[in-house]
Length: 270
Image (cartoon, rainbow, N blue to C red; front, side, top):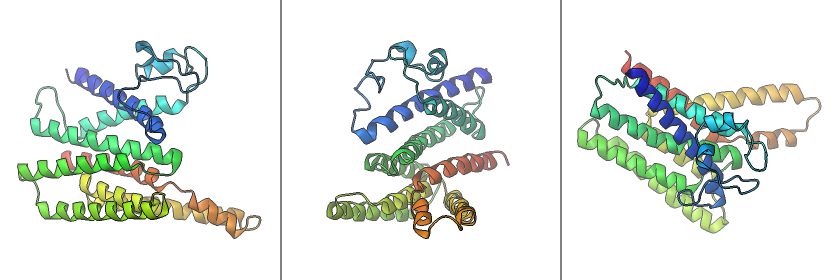
């Protein structure tokens, strides 16, 4: 019975993963993610039912479009599969059991999934464009507010800590909006700061701070290795430009997901 339940959870995860790939492609291009039918980005062929089955469609089609035979990027398959695995890991960490389903645990699971939607979209879009879409931040803001309201209703936490984070997030949104109006472009720094606040609300201080520290340590090590390797034949200007292309939203999000799942395991499996 538990095996059947976890198969369902995996399938649900792959469906979400399929949505992530669709949204990561469409949101930056301002394409509707709900009403527009899925299509091949190369030949615009509308995908049929059997072409929309997550993971399996990629395997059965040999990683190619049915019509134009253009190769489908492996990231679609990888993200769908990893999303299914992430769902299973979270369910396992929360001790979800077919024989003793708990409504509070299921609600907790649902909020984590809603958070993962935001964090996966942020990671995917930032990896492609080095930017964080405002619409995704607004979505994560709504999820954060809902989560805080739920915790307060259930009496599981003090509201003061979360109010502070929400106020900080609102202030950052206002400043970023004014900055975008003046400069006609979004500020990547403010987008990253808002992402960190969202992470603080939905995970916790230890996980969030650890995520940031690990990323900066990894970048620091990469910078040292790059400098030592290229000190004799690379200019400082080239070195600086190389460092400026780091996609912090992508790196923070991935690290946060891994640490968050690990933290869930230790919380529920002490």
